[in-house]
Amino acid sequence: MKAVVYKGPFEVAVEEVDDPAVQHPNDVIVKVTSTAICGSDLHMYEGRTAAEPGITFGHENMGIITEVGPGVTSLKEGDRVVMPFNVACGFCRNCAEGFTGYCLTVNPGFPGGAYGYVAMGPWKGGQAEYLRVPYADFNCLKLPPGKEHENDFVLLADIFPTGYHGCELAQVRPGESVTVYGAGPVGLMAAYSALLRGAKKVFVVDRVPERLQKAEEIGAVPINFAEGDPVEQIHEQTGGVGTDKGVDAVGYQATAGGTDREEPATVLNSLIRTVRATGMLGVPGLYVPSDPGAPDEQSKQGMLLVAVGKLFEKGLRLGTGQCNVKRYNRQLRDMIIEGRAKPSFVVSHELPLDQAPSAYDKFDKRIEGYTKVVLRP
Image (cartoon, rainbow, N blue to C red; front, side, top):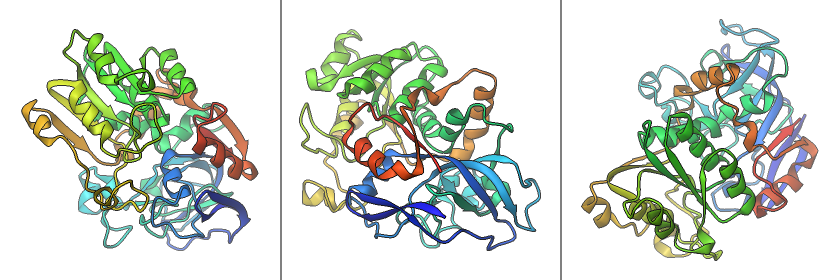
């Protein structure tokens, strides 16, 4: 089958690889109908992780089941399903407590597994024609048959739940104001989720015009940090108080001002300044324990200069970590089915799998309106 294979920094290729096979009674094989490129994939693509050439990318996957292992009880051939990016067993302590992003079974020695991602276990990615799904009864979310809502449903694998998770970490409540740093796919989903949860005003901070325009289209207030200190811009619109809650949807590759100079802690420190005293911060943006491409020695070891004193002084509370997708994907699926949510507004391009190398290049450079790419194997 064809699959997107990592070759080295800034290079992927569509190559022929072995077809997946049922290896365990609880496996299914899925014919992939949609698979999305994630901003997290860019960390590997840019050589900012320990990823070795040969990895098959792709953790945002959905499709049709073509083969079912003998131990699977709730699924059958022909079922349309979407899989959380988290590979999880369903029975370890963390899974039983709802922390499926930190499964203790699927990646021995490390809490958490994922498809097609460095250090997240042996699981092949789904930017391919077929995908093996382990513990399938637990990991597959069934969808209505047909092709309706295809671009909405594929976002249930990661970015819609992850954006919602950012709001959950910050405990966004109806009537509150929220600042989201980052208008990439997760940031837009966080802003959208805040509005779905009843936020009265949502500010979205970025500098890419197309992304800020999308934020404005869903009812958020765009803040261009290239035009001035975003904290000051938001304080001017909140009577000098700041917002009730904040979400970091950027992570460790944040840049300062209108430049391309990386300052890994700049978004965290901006949020600490932005959010009012006793507010809450949600941080689904990715931070890593080691970053070979970081701008300084401390950051290379995952140690950032964060204004902890100001965090303490303001009595701010902080929630972090990757999304436990299964906590949210069922209810978000049902909101899509009932017409209450349509996250596909973030999708900018739908392309055949063969165009993945070009799509990665353009998405990485944030050009030609590349906001979210869905590949069709």
